[in-house]
Length: 400
Image 1 (cartoon, rainbow, N blue to C red):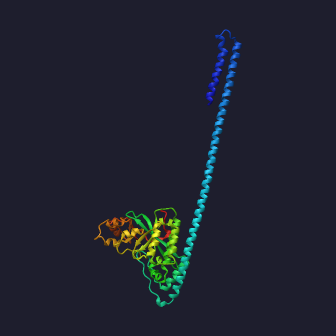
Image 2 (cartoon, rainbow, N blue to C red):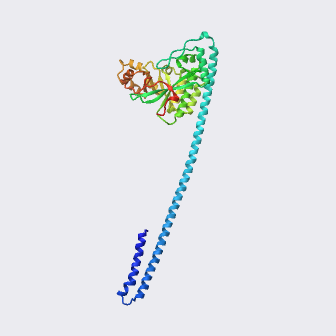
Image 3 (cartoon, helix red, strand yellow):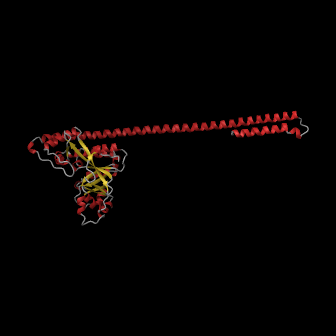
């Protein structure tokens, strides 16, 4: 009740008392002035008494109402506190599980890397002993494209460089963008390995690839590249959820009876990587996959992993078979695509692959003229030096 209401009530019974005290004697002859004053005073005091009782009662009800409201707020606060405790306990449990899971993943990766490094050091050591005869040296291959011209190294020098690079953690991960066309927006990356010598000069695959194949090192290097890629994925976390990394797996790795089963087990235990990793195989290797390799890759496919076929030399492929084997990407050199211009109408090539949910990527695009001609085929994705050279992963802004 407001102050104005109290004033009006007080004014009402004060007015009634005044009328009785001063007006009644003139109206009623039986009322003398003294009796009227006494009666008026009594009426005023009675009004004050009733007004006080009403104020006390109203105040008591208001106090009770406030106490009930406070009690309800207190109960709500208790409920919220209990909910917060439950959420905190659940959060602690989740953090504990995540920490345990991450620790398990790190330990698992360290075991695999330890095995790999042991294999590399053992194999490279044996190869060094076999290659210590200078008469067996041969000239290394040359690089192509926009890469710097490599120095010539003998076989023994290359193996020695690789031995020390692997021991000294000088095998780096390089990333080359795969872009959407025609916007040239980066959507994926392909992974490459680069080896540094003791002076931090880069040794390109063209210089050591054949030698590592002969010495049995290439499979181990492929898998080191894979785990370098996994480390980048871990650092990337939930950013750019659609960004994928294409990692080439050689036939040597697939047929490594010691490592390949361990690799499959590791991927099965970490199938959350399926959203990021695309395993890539050359057309030649895809055509000669053994039944064991096919079953192992199918197991990964059922767990969400997808594959890419590259180094395509013949477009006459069984696309339905590729799709059933979880291949979702195909990389074709722009030169090979343009060579089909007389035989294939625009968009027919893309539609043929799209019919089986396979995205066609035109690679080795190195100039604007090539991209103009490739766009006539309606292709959605491209890769090549025109869009970016392979760059060191630590210098690549993956969070854009």
